[in-house]
Amino acid sequence: AAGVIQSPRHLIKEKRETATLKCYPIPRHDTVYWYQQGPGQDPQFLISFYEKMQSDKGSIPDRFSAQQFSDYHSELNMSSLELGDSALYFCASSEGQGALTYEQYFGPGTRLTVT
Amino acid sequence: GDSVTQMEGPVTLSEEAFLTINCTYTATGYPSLFWYVQYPGEGLQLLLKATKADDKGSNKGFEATYRKETTSFHLEKGSVQVSDSAVYFCAPRGSEKLVFGKGTKLTVNP
Image 1 (cartoon, chains in turn blue, cyan):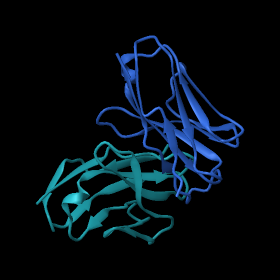
Image 2 (tube, one colour):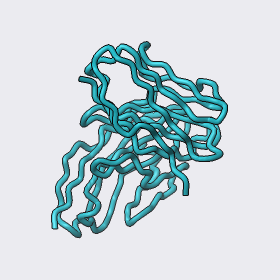
Image 3 (cartoon, chains in turn yellow, purple):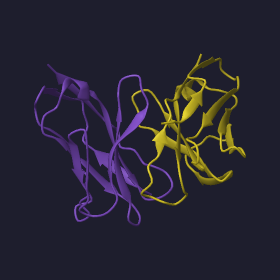
Image 4 (cartoon, chains in turn red, green):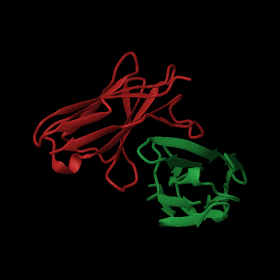
């Protein structure tokens, strides 16, 4: 079965640079979520989209922005990178907004290292 | 907002031992409850879920029962294997997002 695809899998950037992470949800999933997992930490919710509209927002820095496109893929744009942005970034997808019983299926993550 | 308190690790067990990882939550409304597992170097995988009171989620020998009266969703397995070594996250979902516990690292020795 098709899974959530994230690219790139690994990314190394320097401080103050920008980065773009991409997420391709499972086919027919219309909702995408972004989470950030710092080293040894639990995943923290950043932002979510349903039908190309932002549906919820968590602890996402103002330096970050995201959007969902007409084909439902999503991109997380990160600017003025800081050392503390080094983390594993997960994308998840599900079908149907507001259906709490629906599972979120996670991608393998993008490991961002800021030097 | 939603929150979860999860038993802190690390937990080290011998193969075939009994496992319990405690999880209690606070959430608005009537949340669904999930356990996710993260194997070393990998992403998050759904282990099991329960969507209403007294539901029991089960998968791969793991079980957890949705206890509304105690707001708990403890994870159990009767006989762990070395391959169960991973980090386990309890996650209630009372709104769009999942709220994860701090994670419990389990190491199972042969």
